[in-house]
Image (cartoon, rainbow, N blue to C red; front, side, top):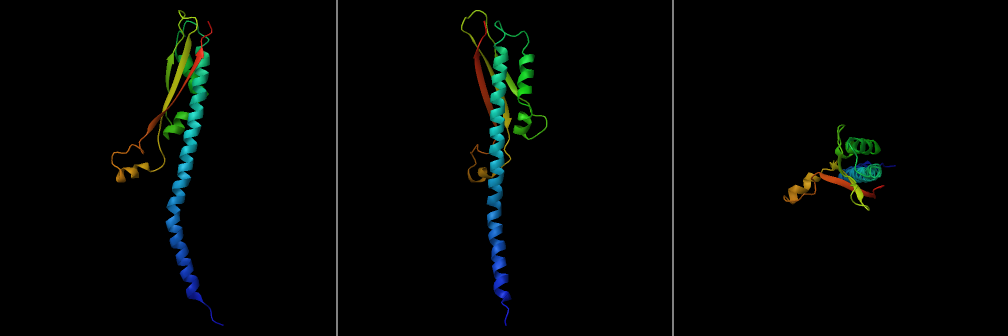
Length: 151
């Protein structure tokens, strides 16, 4: 009985080569899924936070005396969203408030929340092929909510 060692070793060598070719694509797919999941989480979080801020701002018919209360509520409504988006522990949310005015009967208040999003994917490699591309650059995620003032 002869053993065919040559065929098995050649097949395992082909398997290693195939694995080496497929592994980078598989890793890019997994990291891409993580990135888009992070982006979805941050978008939902800042949308909810802007809605909560607009709701609180609508309780002040002549505008809040201090915007810090609304900013604090927005930051508490989206804990960790900025850190998740910016991949560091000290990410910040930008909060912009357009308050109610007592002079307009059907006035709206608006709160806009923004944060910078940093990619985990190595999209800077696209610039090798297309030097003018902005695909790999960080960008701002933003959400704005408006509510009728409670005059």
